[in-house]
Length: 594
Image (cartoon, rainbow, N blue to C red; front, side):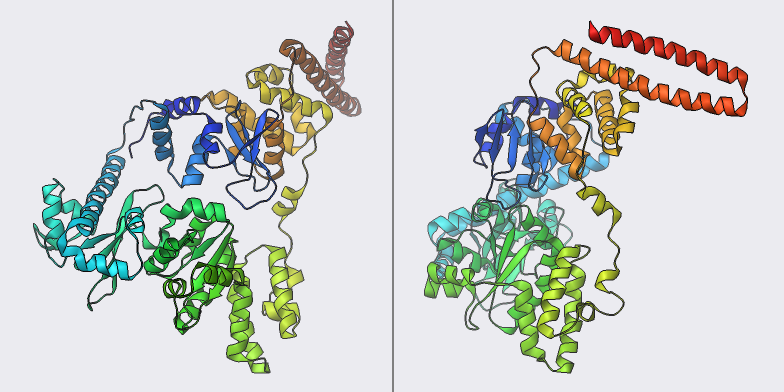
């Protein structure tokens, strides 16, 4: 994807209707001057997600996510900034001008575009061969035996690579594709300089899509008895197995709607579940679940339900997954199937309802792991010692979240008949860890005086008036109000001086915690001003008066110091300044009464 000139994003934001864009994914209801709905970024039952059409921004008071139409597209669809700009530009008919890229940036951009392009052509060749070529009859029969309908084959663009060394070599050449690029994509293998052969042969092909819908790589399942049984594309600049989940692109809407994602181990597990009506499912690509997988899932759901095979390998995989979910704070439960079944065979044998019942009965992952440790080691003195040691990585994975760690330790120490500090491990006593200062600060509620809040509300509505308030002494007053007031005014001043077309909602990208929440509330419920000029004059008069009072107090302190020091010249000069200040203050008071 190309880079764009700076004004392109502003033009796209001006043209896009944030209510229309977000409304395609979130059911929004009008509530006064704004719209409300259930947050798409965290699970909730009461709407706390608000969208402001006038200011073109959104904010969730539940999880504190906020931004403009571009940031919504980036987070919801896992897009890059450039992809979000291009997507909305195409939707709203905005012509984009490309900016100058550095040679290295240009090389990487062209490389990624080329890899996606050749992957797309290859996916089409494999898919059409499966559907139309008589030589793919055994593959079609195999998929039929596995219960795959034509709809599933089309939706996931399944294909077939015949048992030939040159099927893709010839097919790509006929389409004008460069063999070197196909080799870099992992589709072809170079035998010697200038000579290539197909990587995938006699295999059912599973195109693997990025979350933005581009073909990033492939998986292949052999039809015969050869090895390996499953073969994936090698890692490339557009394909990383540890970050990619099979089927999530096709199923992400179902995952969001269900509020949870079912995690299975194999491609056919996933396809069988979708075929049988369970679409909120994803699968790692022949590798163990990784932290990056869990981070990706967090963008779409607040809960994962992991379906592992009932054999010993499946149980070990469940044990390895627990720290990942604890570290990323994603709720997880586990379904362990009978030893003779995997999700594919289970749902084809017993049906959707039976598997849904298993999911409803799923156990919380930490609880499951603890019970397995008790089964393995017992509750003898030696057994408890082994359990304590094996629980330490799980406790460490919780990190600095004190409440969650305290609940976890208390719950399982009680089951073991131990004191909490004994479970935590040597040298880590629960009460010993001092509370981080930043946490306590962020939890404090931001409180402003009534007058300062009125000034801030006005400036968020009319940021172009900020310079008049700065002249009147606003920065000094904000500093005396409290640290939060000073931070907000400083950031607003920088934003206005940059003059890049961003509105005051851009503050939300720099603020955190209670300050961000307060500004979001003020932006969401702005007061209406019948007469901007008169309101501004009143507020400016108040700021000047406050500034005068503070200057008068400082002068009086300085006068007292000069008198005690016997500095007559300075003393007389300061008295003169105070007299002039009092005259100015008197004039301001007279104006305020007229």
